[in-house]
Image (cartoon, rainbow, N blue to C red; front, side, top):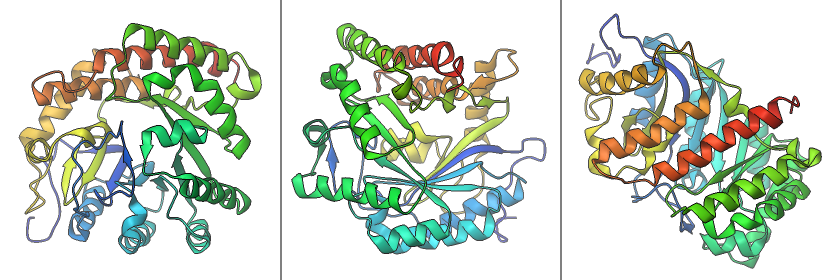
Length: 345
């Protein structure tokens, strides 16, 4: 098996993938103060690891609903990014392709190419210039204008786009301003999320909730709010996978925040051979199994909330402000179910 490059587990322990991430590079042209990639370096993903990743899907007869290419900033490794996209287009026939980007390095040729591949883009922008540049450090007036111009060019070209607006605790009172600004840029939908590595005291949490609810009460703004995480049902046995430079394989997106030694410790496969490390895979699967506690499914937001707790367990101490973040995420779930989904938004 090892010589053929086929990645196997025990026959009765198949992997079923929901979402998959490939972190194309650790490099970034910005220095966001709340960045979830806490231990960035200069490494890029190896194409050997990407090939093994796609072989894993084939062997386990599974295919992610979406493959998300991220970083760092993936357009800093554009040639590599495009090689991965072209491989994915050949090997993952049923998978939608998605790129997370800060949007500064995109040009018109990229927009045309990405549209030809039916790739969607997710821009990181937190609202007005002063809010965004205060925390997405490295953005200046010219680069912020380039970002908003690129967004408009993507909209003009009918390239599928969305945005994630990360909220720093000190900006919790300005959520509505940010959402309005992003609406005026033309985004059809957006995800507003709390910055996980910042300190959310009780006052900041209350401010976030109060201002978020005010948005949901406005029909025009509510229609833009991303509630898919509260509609998606994750069945027992489903899992996310994320591939990290130079080739570590972890169980999902939030594990991006782990330091290199922990990524190595909890990599599902051996980075040199690509062979599944059964004890690590079982660690993740048992953790998820206990979470369901006899329930037929979880919403995707609940699934992700569990990741934050698991990260702390893997680190052996309170690495993330998981209690406060999960408190806000639970609030988002209740608010979306009660207001957004109820009103068919």
